[in-house]
Length: 140
View 1 (cartoon, rainbow, N blue to C red):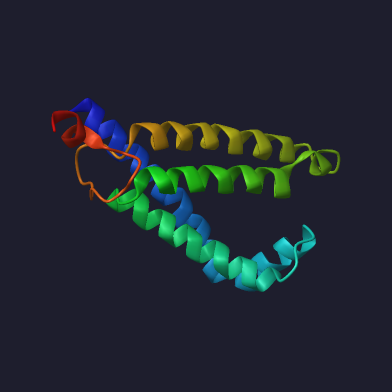
View 2 (cartoon, rainbow, N blue to C red):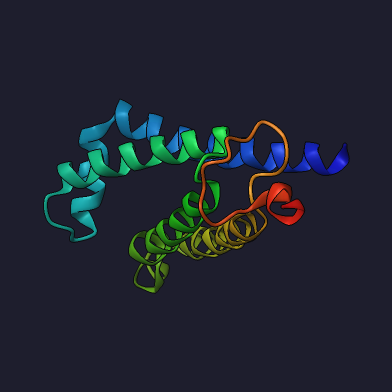
C-alpha cells in the first residue's frame, strides 16, 4: 500500500508541475514568448505554444500512466534543455539565484529518470507504453 501511495503521489507531483507550467504559459503566452525570445530562440510564439501543448501531453501521460516511461524520458530531456537554456552558467553572474534554479532542474531530472525506469506502478495505469512491461510481462 505504501509503494502504491508513493508512486501515485509522485505521478501527481509530476503532473502538477507540468500542469502549472502549462497554465502559466496559456495565461500569459505573450510573456512566455518574450522570455523565449530573450533567450535567443527564433519563432518564440510558436515555441511557447508548442511547449504548452507538450506540457499538457505530459500531464495526461503522468495522470493516466499511458506511455508513462516515454513521457518521463521526454520530460527529463525537456527539463535539462530548460535548465541549460534558461538557467545555465551565462545567467549566474547576473543573478546567483539562477544557479539554484539550474540545480533544481537536475533533481527533477533525476526523479524523471527514476520514474522512466520503474514505470507508472500497478494502480490507475493504462497499459499502453512500450518501455514499461509491468507485472503482467513477468508472469507471462
